[in-house]
Length: 410
Ligand code: HAM
Image 1: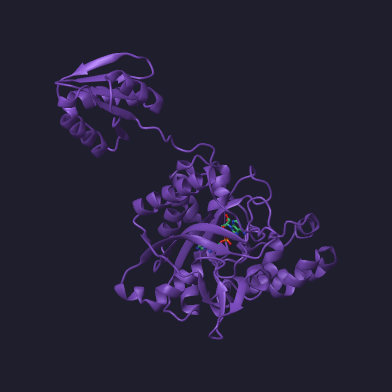
Image 2: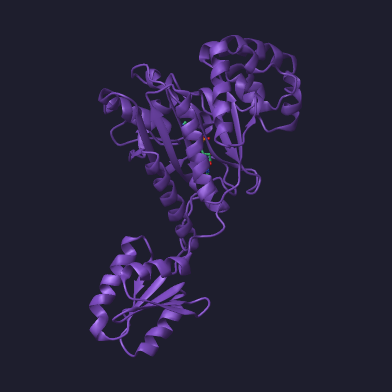
C-alpha cells in the first residue's frame, strides 16, 4: 500500500520542536499578560470578503495565497491568512467597543497562506499577535513595539528594528500620484510583478526585493515629504520615546508592508540568521480598518510574529531539570518533606520531592541523576547540599533554609 504523506507546506511539530513551540508561545503569553492584554480565541474559518475588504484585493495574500473554498452551505469561506482582520471583525460583532475605553487583545494560532514553501515559510504557520483597538495615542505604538522587543529579548533573539510611517490615506493620495508618474518613467527596468503593481499597488514596488527594481526606484520620491505636519510630529514623538526606552531602530522609508490596511506607524523586526525569510515580527497602525469593516471610527494597531521563525532562532530551551530535590532522611520526616517541597514551590522554585522508596543511599543516587542544583535533606533540621561544589550547610528554620538555598541556586 502506498504511504500517505503530509501535504506540501504543512509540518508535524514534535520532539524538541514541540518543546520549542510551547516555550515560544508560553513566553509570549506571559509577556502579553504582563502588559495586561486579554486573550481572544478566533475561528480558523472566516467569510472570504473579510480579507478582501481588509488585507486588500490587490495584495499577494488575497491574489495568490488564500485557501478559499465553498462550504456545504454554499458560503465562500477562507482559512484565515492572518489574525488582525478576524480580531477587528470580532471586536465589531461582539460589540467590544460598547464597553468603552480601548481594548487590548492577543491571539495565537494557525494561519494559512499558499506560498512557495522554504525554510521559515510554510503554508500552515502559527502566529502570536496582539492588537490595541480604540486609541490613537502614540504611547500605544511605543508600548506595542516595546512589548515585542521584550519578547525577543526574553527569548534571546537578536534583531534589527525598522520603522516607517505611512501617514494617512489622505497624505498618501498626492504621493501615490507622483510615485506613479515616477514609476512610469522606469517601467522597463521593473520586474513583471512590479509592472502590474505599479498601477494597482504602487507602494509595494518600493519594497520589492528584486535588485533591478531597487535600482530603478533608488531616486523615487519618499512619502515622508508628503506627510502633514501633525503626522511628522507624531513620528518624531515615536522616535523620541523609543530612544528614551533604549530601543534601537532604523528608519526605513521603503518599509511599506504587504497588507493594505496600514496608516502611520509600521515596523518590522528582522534578522539575517535564518535566510531569506528574515522578518520575525511585524505590524503597525490601521486607524481606518474598523470603520472600513462596518464599525465606528476606531484607531487601532497591532503586531504578529511567526512562531516557526522564532523557533528557528531559539538556541536553548530552559532547563527541564529540577532546581532542588527534597529528601526526607527517614519515614518519620516524610510529612516535613511534603511541607518543605510546598514551601519551595510556593516561592516558584522547581522542586522534586524524592518519591523513590528504599535506602537513603539509593535516594541520593537518584537525586544525583536528576541534575538538580541543590538537595535539601529533611530531618529535625535541614541540610542543604550544593550539588556543584559538594559543600553542605545546615539550617534549623525554614527561613534560614531558604536563605542558604537562595545563594546556592542562583
Ligand atoms: P505579516 O507581516 O503578514 O503581518 O505576518 C506577520 C509575521 O508572520 C511575519 O513577520 C512572519 O514572521 C510570519 N509569517 C508570515 N507568513 C508566514 C509564512 N508563510 N510562514 C511562516 N511565517 C510566516 C500580519 O499578519 C499582520 N496581521 C500583523 C499585524 C497585526 N499588523 C497589525 N496587527
